Image (cartoon, rainbow, N blue to C red; front, side, top):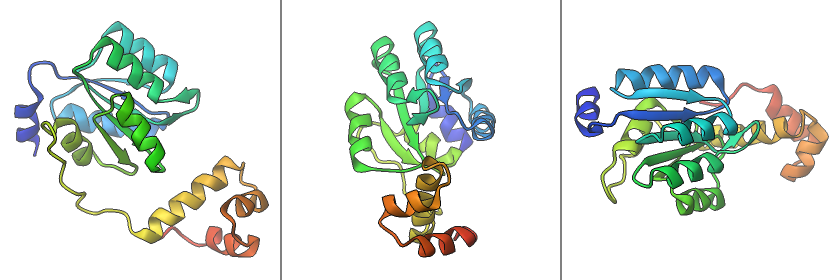
Length: 184
């Protein structure tokens, strides 16, 4: 896989990674460097836009939701500065509306977290209308549901009653789900 990636990258191997999850960002940066990319990282919209403006990358991986705003602002900056760049948008919660918005604004592909370096590399290097292969080990439906519940719970500041109301779920049912370990 690494040999193919090195052959497909081309001369400009610049890659901008924008994600506010610092441990994930570090791991992904190391993995992409091993695949031959020259990586720059940013943890915010402001930092991502500054790097994209100063030196527009050939490739980018941008998280949709960042602490200081929307990752699509970074995608727009990259597209304005370098229309031929290949941009993959990552998000912890996939929704059709945000996928459409990301593609309309110029993203090459849209992946749900947790995406590994192989999935991201495949999406970045896919040629034309070629679709990347399906993931080797996709999340189970139970895991996707659990991730969604956890995200809404965090967005509601860990308020069980508010989370249950927003998910249209009984509070006790939600408490039981939250008390269990995450499914595989």
